[in-house]
Image (cartoon, rainbow, N blue to C red):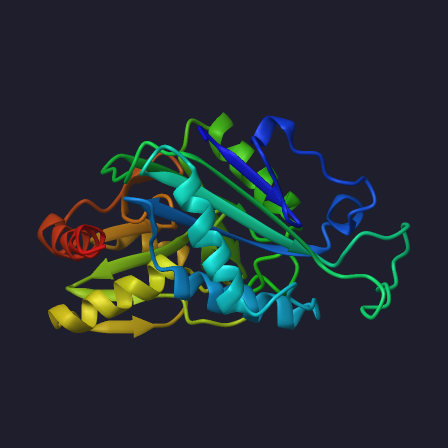
Length: 279
């Protein structure tokens, strides 16, 4: 198939898939999601994504439709059905299908829904020309859950686009938290600095990998909050996400920033590419 959609056992093309209007994801954004990249028909960092899926579902009290290992096997099988060896794989789990009611439906009677789609992808994207714009972080206080409720992120991403930028940087009480669809880290004097894992940022899989790369390469790491001013004065600003693993920011709010330690960034990028080639 050129692309693929799956919903509770039914498989079609993305264009033909139909989802019930009473799916609670439609009414309330009552669900969680994951995105992974597929290289050579193999899902990159699948276990990391399954672990985060399980954590997010637990935090919002959604029962998985199957054990995470079984979901992983299903995703791996679906990735083999798409013609392109390089794919963008998305899946979401919602609390189920039931008449609109803010209260949870009885889990004994209403099972959670699993929706998956996979489509061809152009491959790894790496850039040295990311432009950033800072926005006030007005999101709720559970940013660590990969929930479907993404309206503040959508609004921030649109603001970035309209400002001619690649990404929006959320700032809460003067401190950088993350991007609208990415983690933000900085490098200063050879030290890799990234926001600690708490309720204000998503536990990004690429963030996790970069910390592992730093350990292997002997690069010092600090997991702490940093201010917008610190970010503007950093040697490098790294924007990372599943589909954009290592972007170097060159501009923040219209001013030139970073781009002072390309050698260290290249070491981190090489570790990522080595992982992909090892699949």
